Length: 96
Length: 212
Image 1 (cartoon, rainbow over the protein chains, first blue to last red):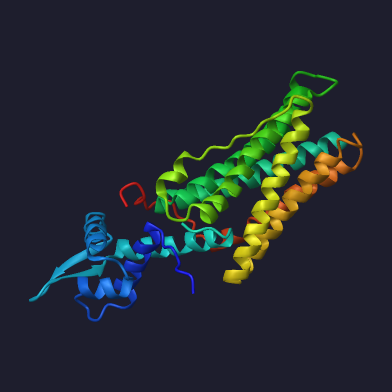
Image 2: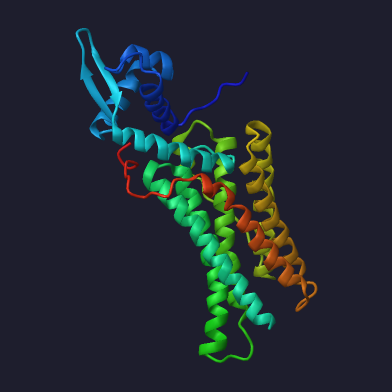
């Protein structure tokens, strides 16, 4: 099976989806968990998480062992909008 | 009567193109996606192209009271529409040929050599080729994703291509019904591109794109 290239935007969508739908507990998802679920390298994930927290799309929560990330209400709105526009672009056979 | 019908269809094309452009623009503002930016340019160009012809003819006949309408208005309008068709085809080209390079995408520019015999004729030919290419790529995408809305987009682009072909053919039979059939086909095609819009949230308040 051919590898599917993911755009920067689709990686962000995957990270937000993971924190919204697949977070293991209410405190959020750990970096290790996100690396595994969103299939991104640590270096890239760290930069994206920093941006998403700055933009208010993710909330950083501290736990005993490590930082965890939880989706914010703004992040939920963004994810909903992103999915709608992704559908729109998909209809043209394009990726956003 | 024919003039009124022609102007009305062009103005309808202007409205539909502009509406599609606004939706794409909202998408671009929300996500910062370059694909939506290109679709935004494409649909604004298509809409403005129809508008140039519609408003141009209205101004010439109602305000300037010309008895003979200028052909360059039609050529200019079709030329602007071709830019829109190019951006739709260009987006597919980027996806097909430059899937991983962000830098190549921004530096590719079109190179069209235009002989000087009939500008409108040549512009229509270019539009037709771009639209056929867009239609084929969209059908290929449908084979992969099996989304019903993709079929509507493919049909829309196909109808636009057919409209351009009929428009080109109407040069052979000037002042025949072919031109109106061409224009109507293009408007129906543009309307078919509206189907995926129903899935887009009608909000423009969120602005994340530039920083993400």
